[in-house]
Length: 110
Image (cartoon, rainbow, N blue to C red):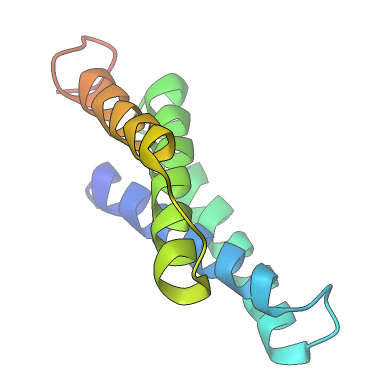
């Protein structure tokens, strides 16, 4: 399978797990708590498959960065978490960094 599709699945699974963590209310809510375990478990499984084909630096940088951006977007939309101008600029820099690591850099497996 395409390693970037696996990486995308890992990122989505991590976003599900992190959102469930917010909803779990300190693991006092059973369904969101199960979502944390399943989301993170699947994320790490898919991440391990991705690492069979892509360099660890590229994988981790992409996974962590897009996780940050995704969680910030979920926080804004679902939980009314604010994002100010410096935060938005930081997110733009993160996205630019992911682009640089994956596209023009020779770090990634083109």
